[in-house]
Length: 585
Image (cartoon, rainbow, N blue to C red; front, side, top):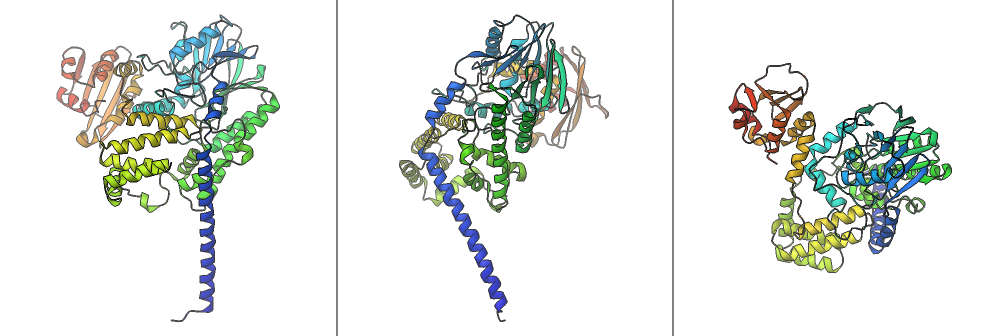
């Protein structure tokens, strides 16, 4: 078969295209390498320490005659709007202890009672200090939140163990030389308290906006999704002031959080900033960092902030469409100089690198497109093969030590981690890993990354260990709404041992006049607070207090309870069998 001139021409053209593509790709790699070297050589620890001045001192700042903001008492600010016969508190910090400090300072300004509370969104640093602001439990204030807040709280209950561990690492709760937490001095969780400080909202906002009036103050709740989809801002037209929640703070936004969060929609976030601009506020009060004054100053700030968010979104999609993988895109997308040097866009909280990967995941999910990822080896399997490939434990450990000596900290971290997975008692590899983690942490501009590296190093050295606080766990179980408590059981079902257990149990709680139906089928658990429509196999009559104590004890001793405190119709043995299928932790 002969080859035509046309075929040769097509081949040459195709080769030219492929060569251009290769040259383009290697140029991207070169730029990424130069950026990484520059970032490694110029850690911004001094700037990070300077950033602490934004919120280090505990103070109450007067924004307008009727609006004050408490800064530095906790990770998040708390705002007070003074009305005719009471005050409205917007965000309540992350702990009852911090909340009480804030309320005491507010009461130096006015003795008017708390008539209303607004949760801007579901994050712990905005809702878990609520009980501090409930002055009289017999006359609680009305509490407003977006209707999706309840769904987001349930997600937290599903992942509470993992989320708390990763949040503790990211915020550096156990780091002895903590510089700051990026958007506040530190996260002040009441880890020793058995009391859950959150109080569930009594009023739920739906739609785009809602006009409300509390203590004589006219306010507009505005849906401004950003860090969360349930986020709302509070617009006080009489004061020309916008309380903008976490849509802006004096740091590059956490477009993805390494503690683990649902994917954040960057276009929703940038649209929310557009909406904030359209209100033309003269005073802007974020839930983190300090208030901003001046309509033009605020407009320019919000415009730059939203453009940086859109830039990360657009450029990530641009490189994704060129065929780059998540880590490759993250290596080449950087803010242009005029945005990177913006005083509100330094990477003191989120980073462009993490944000890019979040965007990729939002559009394409976990799979990058490389078939290597479709059915990968487990980390332990990969470690065993890599150590064997490298010549055995001693040789690979030596390579890790050499990489550490060359200050190739990421590579040293990778190699030493392989060795430790194969030989967890290897002291040489652990020393390399710890030193690599500390070095990587010391080179982070974002305290999130810095704290995560440092905390993981301390875990590796055995200096800290995250363990469940049994008293705190018991306190949560005693306070969670029954429906939330039951739904939390769904993700603790032992499917391996109980996959064929099929049963419908109806619970009647006599002291609170509530009922729950729990159905187990096909290795899943279904929870409903509606009357059962199908046949019930077992009926349980009990008080909520007795049931909560049973949950605290991981449902052990149900047989003894059934003789007095709990009535079971339909079979005690089957009931204890079903309840024994939930993980004991």
